[in-house]
Length: 502
Ligand code: NOJ
Image (cartoon, rainbow, N blue to C red; front, side):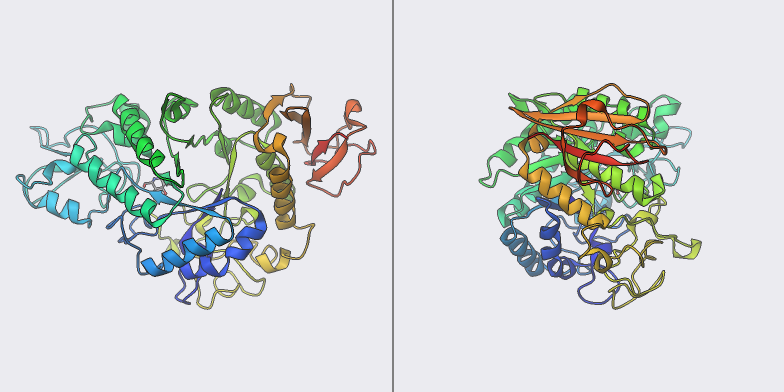
């Protein structure tokens, strides 16, 4: 899966903000990378307080990105190239400019009043409950002068939470899924999807949890709602899928949101433990074991190293060598790897001076625009006709797309090779994972399907480590470094190798 942050991908109309035309212009490049599907962060009309995660109309395209005609063209071009399209569906909250909320806030008697979560302040005038919003450290309740009540928003005040306990809300949101499924999309990434289970069930939490109420919103209703969403998806001929963002208190709990084979919910549920792991052999080993355990058969995990909410892993780990080893890990894991556009170039975050900060939650760096060409500086060039909305990654000049396109030894070359190998190798695509005990800094696992076995070795350390004796007869299928044959030479620092057997 290839995540595109549309504002930062490619600018078709030269206004400094990426758009659908820009994506259309690069579909061939995405196909050449070898991914199966593209997920677009939100492209709906939005006041952009949270850059599209504040949706004012679920069934249209924001003019900054293009039109519905552009969308249809983009979908057709993606499908011609055998790429599927997932949209980002934002079910927990709308924009405060959504007509539903405008109507809801208009009066206590509004027919849409109960579409959102309204409460009276406490007798002493304090907010209805102790919940804090996820952004800006303010209460999750904002008083609305007009009616005197407060509305709930787990994120910005411009993102009021919908009340999914109201069946009309459920119907209306099902309609938004149908709108895009009828247009031919192949699925959705669903934003903070477990939150829809809370409805109006928002009573006081312990002080610790009230600071991050998101983590305390695992409710049976969420699972019921997801089962009904799944039935809707399953009724479509294109067999659409949904991957959900589920953040919960206990690590691994998100796995329960795929349901069971007879009562399915999400197809995939994100696990973000890999995003948070430091580059350390023991930690990586523990994380792989935990994710594989929580998502054991018939569940299937995801593997995420970067996205639009976290510093890029090339920046977190600190070198190309780390990022190359991470690429081998990510693309040989049991699970669906989610690539964040630009990681295949080894991009770092951008440096955003205080006067250029636009995100309310400090995430501008990882949203730096993609440098298509090497020519340019921190603010202009790199294939963008106008200076883009954010500064470029700090390594834009050395790591642009054009500087890597024709170089098989580049990061892009490595990603292409690994994706092609994965596509052609059943054990890597869907085989079981057999994780060996950690040997110093040497991480090792087998992927197995029928009689096919693939071995992956990763030297996570910064010193050379001996080549394992039992792997002297294996052959190299892909490697993060220069190795093309097994000759017993020690593994270089941060070297990762994929091995097969004749
Ligand atoms: C999670 C999204 O990934 C993030 O970008 C957004 O700000 C919040 N959900 C709120 O929608």
